[in-house]
Image (cartoon, rainbow, N blue to C red; front, side, top):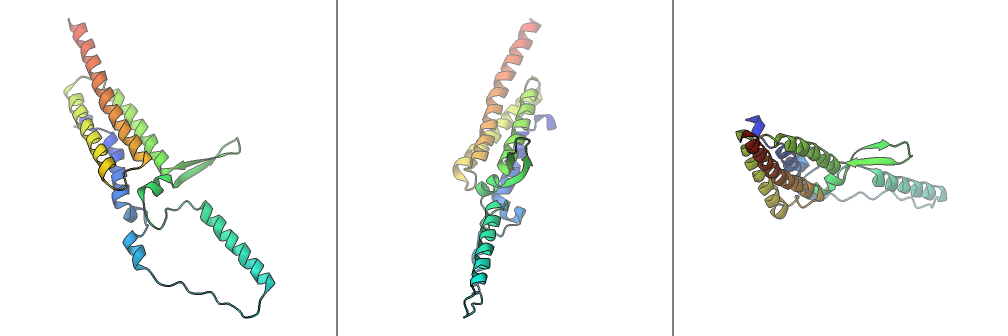
Length: 189
C-alpha cells in the first residue's frame, strides 16, 4: 500500500497544516486574539526638565529597537502563510563573506524536489502499484490546484512550486510508465 502513496502529498499536507492551522502551530496569536487585545499603550513618564543627554540616549535606544526589528526572523504578529514562507529558517556564513539565508519556503521547495525525484524513480516500474500511484498523484494535483485558486493562504510562490512539482509528477509519471510498458512489450515479443 505504501508503494502507491504519492510522496508529494506529505509536503502538501504539511503546508496545509501551516496555512490553515498556522497561528496555533507556530505560537502566533490568531488575528482575532490580536484584535481583542486593544489595551491602550501607557505614555512614558516625561520629566518637565529637559535633559540633553537623556534625549541622545533615547535616540540611541530607538535606533537599536529599529535595528532589532529589522533583523528579527520571528513571524509577524498577524499570521499569514506568505509571511511565514519568507521568514528565515536558518542562515549560513559562507567563505565568500556572504550570508546564505534559508527561508521556510526554501525548505518546503527543497523537500518537495527531493520527493519528486523519488517519485520519478518509482514511476519507472509498471506494476499495479504504479498505476494507483499515478491516479493518486493526479488527485494531489487537483487538490493543489483547487487550494491555490480558492483557499486563502495558498496563493504563494512556495505553494505554486509545490503544485508545479505535482504536475511534473503526474505528466512525467504517465510518460515514463508508457515508455517502460512499451519497452517491456517490445522485449516480450
